[in-house]
Length: 332
Image (cartoon, rainbow, N blue to C red; front, side, top):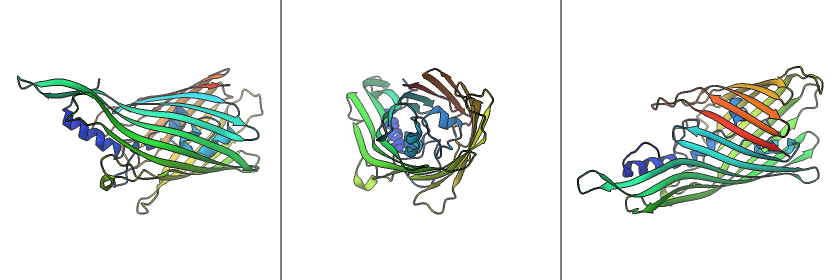
Protein backbone atom coordinates (compact mmCIF):
# COMPACT_ATOMS: atom_id res chain seq x y z
CA UNK A 1 0.00 0.00 0.00
CA UNK A 2 1.21 3.53 -0.75
CA UNK A 3 1.84 6.06 2.03
CA UNK A 4 -1.44 7.05 3.65
CA UNK A 5 -3.23 10.27 2.74
CA UNK A 6 -6.73 11.47 3.55
CA UNK A 7 -9.41 9.78 1.45
CA UNK A 8 -10.74 13.05 0.07
CA UNK A 9 -7.25 14.27 -0.73
CA UNK A 10 -6.41 11.03 -2.53
CA UNK A 11 -9.61 11.19 -4.54
CA UNK A 12 -8.75 14.68 -5.77
CA UNK A 13 -5.16 13.57 -6.44
CA UNK A 14 -6.19 10.70 -8.70
CA UNK A 15 -8.72 12.79 -10.60
CA UNK A 16 -5.91 15.26 -11.23
CA UNK A 17 -3.69 12.46 -12.52
CA UNK A 18 -6.36 11.58 -15.04
CA UNK A 19 -6.18 15.05 -16.56
CA UNK A 20 -2.77 16.61 -15.95
CA UNK A 21 0.80 16.29 -17.17
CA UNK A 22 2.97 13.49 -15.74
CA UNK A 23 6.50 14.32 -14.63
CA UNK A 24 7.84 12.74 -17.79
CA UNK A 25 5.68 14.72 -20.19
CA UNK A 26 6.29 17.93 -22.04
CA UNK A 27 4.76 20.92 -20.26
CA UNK A 28 1.99 22.60 -22.21
CA UNK A 29 0.42 25.06 -19.78
CA UNK A 30 -2.99 23.46 -20.41
CA UNK A 31 -4.80 20.56 -18.84
CA UNK A 32 -4.57 17.34 -20.86
CA UNK A 33 -6.50 14.14 -20.22
CA UNK A 34 -4.84 10.73 -20.29
CA UNK A 35 -1.38 12.18 -19.69
CA UNK A 36 -0.09 8.70 -18.87
CA UNK A 37 -0.01 8.17 -22.64
CA UNK A 38 3.17 10.29 -22.72
CA UNK A 39 5.03 8.11 -20.23
CA UNK A 40 7.73 6.06 -21.99
CA UNK A 41 6.96 2.37 -22.45
CA UNK A 42 9.79 0.00 -23.30
CA UNK A 43 13.35 0.01 -21.98
CA UNK A 44 14.91 0.27 -25.43
CA UNK A 45 13.22 3.53 -26.49
CA UNK A 46 13.53 4.94 -22.97
CA UNK A 47 17.31 4.42 -22.97
CA UNK A 48 17.52 6.16 -26.36
CA UNK A 49 16.12 9.38 -24.91
CA UNK A 50 12.67 8.58 -26.41
CA UNK A 51 14.07 9.25 -29.91
CA UNK A 52 12.00 6.44 -31.42
CA UNK A 53 10.11 7.86 -34.43
CA UNK A 54 12.53 6.11 -36.83
CA UNK A 55 12.94 2.98 -34.69
CA UNK A 56 11.36 -0.43 -35.21
CA UNK A 57 12.10 -4.16 -35.24
CA UNK A 58 10.40 -4.73 -31.87
CA UNK A 59 6.96 -4.56 -30.26
CA UNK A 60 7.91 -1.22 -28.65
CA UNK A 61 7.06 0.41 -31.99
CA UNK A 62 3.35 0.04 -31.13
CA UNK A 63 3.79 2.80 -28.50
CA UNK A 64 6.13 5.08 -30.48
CA UNK A 65 5.51 4.76 -34.22
CA UNK A 66 3.31 1.88 -35.45
CA UNK A 67 5.04 2.01 -38.85
CA UNK A 68 8.10 0.47 -37.15
CA UNK A 69 6.19 -2.79 -36.68
CA UNK A 70 6.70 -3.58 -40.37
CA UNK A 71 10.43 -4.21 -39.78
CA UNK A 72 9.74 -6.84 -37.11
CA UNK A 73 11.50 -9.94 -38.49
CA UNK A 74 9.74 -12.55 -36.32
CA UNK A 75 6.77 -12.89 -34.00
CA UNK A 76 7.43 -11.41 -30.56
CA UNK A 77 5.86 -11.45 -27.10
CA UNK A 78 7.07 -8.68 -24.77
CA UNK A 79 6.56 -7.69 -21.15
CA UNK A 80 7.40 -4.09 -20.21
CA UNK A 81 7.57 -2.82 -16.63
CA UNK A 82 8.52 0.44 -14.94
CA UNK A 83 8.07 2.07 -11.56
CA UNK A 84 7.60 5.76 -10.86
CA UNK A 85 6.92 8.00 -7.88
CA UNK A 86 3.17 7.65 -8.46
CA UNK A 87 2.96 3.89 -9.12
CA UNK A 88 3.81 1.13 -11.58
CA UNK A 89 3.30 0.61 -15.29
CA UNK A 90 3.01 -2.77 -16.99
CA UNK A 91 2.38 -3.68 -20.62
CA UNK A 92 1.98 -7.00 -22.41
CA UNK A 93 2.45 -6.82 -26.19
CA UNK A 94 2.31 -9.42 -28.91
CA UNK A 95 3.10 -8.87 -32.59
CA UNK A 96 2.95 -11.28 -35.52
CA UNK A 97 4.50 -10.38 -38.90
CA UNK A 98 3.33 -11.86 -42.20
CA UNK A 99 5.21 -11.54 -45.47
CA UNK A 100 1.96 -11.12 -47.41
CA UNK A 101 -0.40 -9.44 -44.93
CA UNK A 102 1.82 -7.10 -42.88
CA UNK A 103 2.33 -7.02 -39.11
CA UNK A 104 -0.45 -7.22 -36.53
CA UNK A 105 0.03 -6.26 -32.88
CA UNK A 106 -2.06 -6.04 -29.71
CA UNK A 107 -1.30 -4.76 -26.20
CA UNK A 108 -2.70 -4.31 -22.72
CA UNK A 109 -1.10 -1.46 -20.77
CA UNK A 110 -1.98 -0.64 -17.14
CA UNK A 111 -0.68 2.13 -14.90
CA UNK A 112 -1.48 1.24 -11.27
CA UNK A 113 -1.46 4.09 -8.76
CA UNK A 114 -1.87 1.76 -5.79
CA UNK A 115 -4.33 0.19 -3.38
CA UNK A 116 -5.51 2.45 -0.55
CA UNK A 117 -7.68 2.35 2.54
CA UNK A 118 -10.82 4.46 2.54
CA UNK A 119 -11.16 6.02 6.00
CA UNK A 120 -13.70 8.07 7.93
CA UNK A 121 -13.57 9.68 11.35
CA UNK A 122 -13.93 7.05 14.07
CA UNK A 123 -15.61 7.37 17.49
CA UNK A 124 -12.33 8.48 19.05
CA UNK A 125 -11.71 11.10 16.40
CA UNK A 126 -9.07 9.09 14.54
CA UNK A 127 -9.38 7.63 11.04
CA UNK A 128 -11.30 4.37 10.79
CA UNK A 129 -10.95 2.15 7.66
CA UNK A 130 -14.28 1.39 6.03
CA UNK A 131 -13.20 0.16 2.58
CA UNK A 132 -10.50 0.13 -0.06
CA UNK A 133 -10.08 1.77 -3.45
CA UNK A 134 -7.69 1.51 -6.38
CA UNK A 135 -6.89 3.98 -9.18
CA UNK A 136 -5.65 2.90 -12.60
CA UNK A 137 -5.19 3.97 -16.18
CA UNK A 138 -5.85 1.28 -18.78
CA UNK A 139 -5.01 1.16 -22.48
CA UNK A 140 -6.09 -1.58 -24.88
CA UNK A 141 -4.28 -1.21 -28.20
CA UNK A 142 -4.34 -2.89 -31.60
CA UNK A 143 -1.87 -2.01 -34.34
CA UNK A 144 -1.16 -2.80 -37.96
CA UNK A 145 1.76 -1.95 -40.24
CA UNK A 146 2.70 -2.82 -43.80
CA UNK A 147 5.17 -1.90 -46.53
CA UNK A 148 3.52 0.36 -49.08
CA UNK A 149 6.33 0.41 -51.64
CA UNK A 150 10.00 -0.45 -51.42
CA UNK A 151 11.49 1.43 -48.47
CA UNK A 152 8.23 3.02 -47.27
CA UNK A 153 6.04 1.59 -44.52
CA UNK A 154 2.93 2.91 -42.79
CA UNK A 155 1.24 1.98 -39.52
CA UNK A 156 -1.94 2.56 -37.54
CA UNK A 157 -2.71 1.91 -33.88
CA UNK A 158 -6.14 2.14 -32.25
CA UNK A 159 -6.30 2.70 -28.48
CA UNK A 160 -9.13 2.42 -25.99
CA UNK A 161 -8.09 4.65 -23.09
CA UNK A 162 -9.62 4.53 -19.63
CA UNK A 163 -9.14 6.09 -16.20
CA UNK A 164 -10.91 4.34 -13.35
CA UNK A 165 -11.28 4.40 -9.58
CA UNK A 166 -12.76 1.21 -8.13
CA UNK A 167 -13.95 1.08 -4.53
CA UNK A 168 -15.03 -1.77 -2.25
CA UNK A 169 -16.74 -1.44 1.11
CA UNK A 170 -18.22 1.94 2.04
CA UNK A 171 -17.60 4.33 -0.85
CA UNK A 172 -19.61 7.42 0.07
CA UNK A 173 -16.62 9.77 0.08
CA UNK A 174 -14.73 7.89 -2.67
CA UNK A 175 -17.29 7.10 -5.39
CA UNK A 176 -16.27 4.82 -8.24
CA UNK A 177 -15.29 6.77 -11.34
CA UNK A 178 -14.72 5.62 -14.93
CA UNK A 179 -13.70 7.76 -17.88
CA UNK A 180 -13.28 6.17 -21.32
CA UNK A 181 -12.20 7.54 -24.67
CA UNK A 182 -10.68 6.42 -27.98
CA UNK A 183 -7.54 7.47 -29.85
CA UNK A 184 -5.37 6.53 -32.80
CA UNK A 185 -1.69 6.79 -33.69
CA UNK A 186 -0.53 7.17 -37.31
CA UNK A 187 3.01 6.77 -38.57
CA UNK A 188 5.25 6.37 -41.60
CA UNK A 189 8.89 5.39 -42.09
CA UNK A 190 11.18 5.67 -45.07
CA UNK A 191 14.47 3.78 -45.51
CA UNK A 192 16.69 5.84 -47.79
CA UNK A 193 18.36 3.96 -50.68
CA UNK A 194 21.88 4.74 -49.47
CA UNK A 195 24.92 2.65 -48.60
CA UNK A 196 24.64 3.86 -45.00
CA UNK A 197 21.32 2.80 -43.48
CA UNK A 198 19.26 5.94 -42.81
CA UNK A 199 15.64 5.75 -41.67
CA UNK A 200 13.30 8.75 -41.47
CA UNK A 201 10.16 8.40 -39.36
CA UNK A 202 7.15 10.57 -38.58
CA UNK A 203 4.22 9.88 -36.29
CA UNK A 204 1.26 11.64 -34.73
CA UNK A 205 0.11 10.09 -31.45
CA UNK A 206 -3.01 10.26 -29.29
CA UNK A 207 -5.42 11.74 -31.79
CA UNK A 208 -8.88 11.23 -30.35
CA UNK A 209 -11.82 12.34 -28.28
CA UNK A 210 -11.56 14.20 -25.00
CA UNK A 211 -11.32 12.17 -21.78
CA UNK A 212 -14.44 12.69 -19.66
CA UNK A 213 -14.33 11.54 -16.04
CA UNK A 214 -17.02 13.64 -14.31
CA UNK A 215 -19.02 15.39 -17.02
CA UNK A 216 -18.67 16.77 -20.54
CA UNK A 217 -17.92 20.28 -19.29
CA UNK A 218 -14.84 18.95 -17.48
CA UNK A 219 -13.61 16.72 -20.33
CA UNK A 220 -9.97 17.32 -21.29
CA UNK A 221 -8.22 16.87 -24.65
CA UNK A 222 -5.75 14.03 -25.08
CA UNK A 223 -2.00 14.84 -25.18
CA UNK A 224 -1.61 14.79 -28.98
CA UNK A 225 2.00 14.86 -30.14
CA UNK A 226 3.72 14.85 -33.51
CA UNK A 227 7.24 13.47 -33.70
CA UNK A 228 9.69 13.37 -36.60
CA UNK A 229 13.06 11.67 -36.41
CA UNK A 230 15.98 10.08 -38.19
CA UNK A 231 18.15 7.06 -37.42
CA UNK A 232 21.59 6.76 -39.04
CA UNK A 233 24.00 3.83 -38.96
CA UNK A 234 27.49 5.37 -38.92
CA UNK A 235 29.43 2.15 -38.37
CA UNK A 236 28.10 -0.90 -40.20
CA UNK A 237 30.38 -3.93 -39.99
CA UNK A 238 29.80 -6.85 -42.39
CA UNK A 239 27.11 -9.40 -41.41
CA UNK A 240 28.47 -11.93 -38.93
CA UNK A 241 31.30 -9.64 -37.83
CA UNK A 242 32.04 -9.27 -34.11
CA UNK A 243 33.03 -5.61 -34.51
CA UNK A 244 30.94 -2.90 -32.84
CA UNK A 245 28.42 -0.91 -34.85
CA UNK A 246 27.07 2.55 -34.07
CA UNK A 247 23.69 4.18 -34.70
CA UNK A 248 22.57 7.71 -33.87
CA UNK A 249 18.98 8.94 -33.52
CA UNK A 250 17.54 12.45 -33.36
CA UNK A 251 13.85 13.36 -33.02
CA UNK A 252 11.86 16.57 -32.78
CA UNK A 253 8.59 16.46 -30.87
CA UNK A 254 5.86 19.09 -30.98
CA UNK A 255 2.51 19.63 -29.28
CA UNK A 256 -0.41 19.58 -31.71
CA UNK A 257 -2.73 22.56 -31.30
CA UNK A 258 -0.26 24.55 -29.20
CA UNK A 259 1.72 26.46 -31.82
CA UNK A 260 3.16 28.92 -29.31
CA UNK A 261 5.23 26.15 -27.74
CA UNK A 262 8.61 25.38 -29.26
CA UNK A 263 9.34 21.76 -30.27
CA UNK A 264 11.72 19.75 -28.12
CA UNK A 265 14.68 17.59 -29.16
CA UNK A 266 15.29 13.93 -28.28
CA UNK A 267 18.68 12.32 -28.91
CA UNK A 268 19.88 8.71 -28.73
CA UNK A 269 22.82 6.47 -29.57
CA UNK A 270 23.21 2.69 -29.72
CA UNK A 271 26.22 0.44 -30.20
CA UNK A 272 26.99 -3.23 -29.79
CA UNK A 273 28.38 -6.42 -31.23
CA UNK A 274 25.44 -7.95 -33.05
CA UNK A 275 22.31 -8.67 -30.99
CA UNK A 276 24.10 -10.27 -28.04
CA UNK A 277 25.05 -7.00 -26.37
CA UNK A 278 23.60 -3.55 -27.03
CA UNK A 279 24.67 -0.36 -25.24
CA UNK A 280 22.36 2.66 -25.36
CA UNK A 281 22.33 6.28 -24.20
CA UNK A 282 20.17 9.32 -24.81
CA UNK A 283 19.11 12.76 -23.71
CA UNK A 284 15.57 14.14 -23.65
CA UNK A 285 15.36 17.94 -23.86
CA UNK A 286 11.77 17.90 -22.60
CA UNK A 287 10.30 21.08 -21.17
CA UNK A 288 9.71 19.48 -17.80
CA UNK A 289 11.53 18.07 -14.79
CA UNK A 290 11.91 14.83 -16.80
CA UNK A 291 14.58 16.24 -19.09
CA UNK A 292 17.96 14.65 -18.72
CA UNK A 293 20.21 11.77 -19.69
CA UNK A 294 19.34 8.09 -19.96
CA UNK A 295 21.36 4.91 -20.33
CA UNK A 296 20.51 1.30 -21.03
CA UNK A 297 21.72 -2.13 -22.02
CA UNK A 298 20.23 -4.91 -24.10
CA UNK A 299 21.10 -8.61 -23.83
CA UNK A 300 19.95 -11.45 -26.05
CA UNK A 301 20.37 -15.19 -25.57
CA UNK A 302 18.88 -17.10 -28.46
CA UNK A 303 15.17 -16.32 -28.56
CA UNK A 304 15.18 -14.45 -25.22
CA UNK A 305 16.02 -10.74 -24.88
CA UNK A 306 16.32 -8.49 -21.83
CA UNK A 307 16.47 -4.68 -22.01
CA UNK A 308 17.17 -2.34 -19.08
CA UNK A 309 17.04 1.46 -18.94
CA UNK A 310 17.49 4.22 -16.39
CA UNK A 311 16.55 7.89 -16.69
CA UNK A 312 18.52 10.27 -14.50
CA UNK A 313 16.29 13.06 -13.32
CA UNK A 314 14.64 14.05 -10.08
CA UNK A 315 10.87 14.27 -9.94
CA UNK A 316 10.08 17.89 -9.13
CA UNK A 317 9.19 18.46 -5.50
CA UNK A 318 9.29 14.74 -4.66
CA UNK A 319 12.99 14.03 -4.26
CA UNK A 320 12.73 10.61 -5.91
CA UNK A 321 14.72 9.31 -8.85
CA UNK A 322 13.07 7.81 -11.91
CA UNK A 323 13.62 4.06 -11.46
CA UNK A 324 14.69 1.46 -13.98
CA UNK A 325 12.63 0.27 -16.93
CA UNK A 326 12.70 -3.45 -17.71
CA UNK A 327 11.58 -5.20 -20.90
CA UNK A 328 11.60 -8.94 -21.44
CA UNK A 329 11.01 -10.24 -24.97
CA UNK A 330 10.48 -13.71 -26.42
CA UNK A 331 11.21 -13.98 -30.15
CA UNK A 332 9.55 -16.90 -31.93
